[in-house]
Amino acid sequence: MTGEADAVASLVLDEFKKLPAKRKPSVRDNGMHEWVPLSGIVAQGPGLFKCVALATGMKCLPALKLPQTNGVAIHDWHAEILALRTFNYFVLEECRRLALSGETSSAFLRRRTADEIAASPISENQNLWHGQPFAWRQDMKLHMYCSEAPCGDASMELIMAAQDDASPWAIPPSIPQTPTPTTDNDNNTNDPLSLPGRAYFSHLGVVRRKPSRGDAPPTLSKSCSDKIALKQCTSLLSSLTALFVSPGSAYLTSLILPEAQFSASACQRCFSADSEVGGRMSPLAHRQSEPPETAWGGGYAFVPFTVRTTTEDFAYSKRAVAARSTLTSASNLAVAWSGNGLEEGIIGGVLQGRKQFSEKGASCTSRRKMWGLGRDVAELLSVEDGGVISRALAVGVYDDIKEVDLLEARRRVKEETRSEALKGWLRNTGDGSFSL
Image (tube, rainbow, N blue to C red; front, side):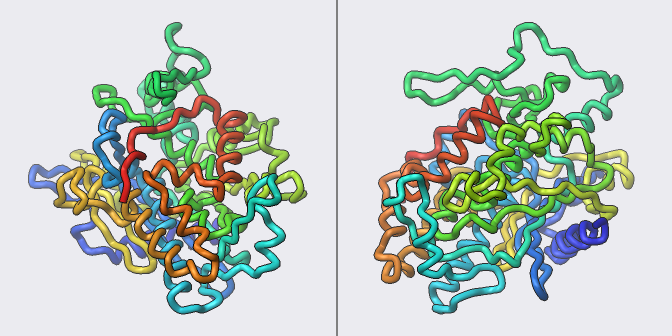
């Protein structure tokens, strides 16, 4: 299946090539050649093979800055995570288009039938009914391309091999073998040191925070490996998008990595449910979509993807840039692009050229803008669904959205996944008290 993997990678790379020069890494005045990771989501179905979202980026906000963000700044703009956010923007815009047009389907979404909705309550409480009006089309597969191995557990062997001394680093006695969350008086987890970042490479199969520089303020943003592993359970849909679209078919079929960025043992350990190869998702094997009665309900199941390799490479990857110049530097610029019109440059989590926490700097993929988009779509659908989604999104503050009854099934999926497979996961709190 290398041919299909190459085709997926080529679609993402070709869309990036079309972007204007201002969206791409540059050569600085001092001769430094910039590099950046790239990630993209590709939809494949009958007569259609299309990149629907892509992003570049490699930074995230320190935990101490989250209370200042007010829903404006993105917390994590590593390419993989920004691509997922952009995909959710793409899906919500598709929902808006269908709601405005009255059409029953697009190339990507379809309206659910009344019988479908009635047959799929969203929780074990059969009286809790949520008529998500849309579903991702079952004949439309989703692939993800990443120009670098996702940070965290899927890249540990590659990091160790890149050291002058490739032997695993020892874990100091003061560092627990299993991260132990601590809480403050408000019951919010707040101990970033209990999640390893760059250090302790011999500690494998664990949840990690983003690998910021050793002298940087700590972050609680989980690694891309961990977030992508979780998507095998929650689907690619965010909490907000899952109010509109049933998650049942919105799972990745494959994750595509360049051959130089693939470690079979790391990917098996990180993403697999096969206990014989040490897959850390093995406690959830019984939640796979077949047989359906073992799944969580509400359209959720454990749906593992296949990791494939490609011979295609990104012209601005770290290794490609290093082959052209000995003077290299990571780019501060991130880019978000979608197949339905979004194109943004992002620096520091906000639109390029804007103040970091000014509302004018909010990306279309920020919490604030996505909540607003969701409200707009819900209003368009309020006649047909009786205002169910509109009421869910009319909460006082952003954090309340994730606690609405309509998302009970999704909460259960996340809680079980984190407690049984992705142990030690600490919530990244502090940016949920804003309102629209």
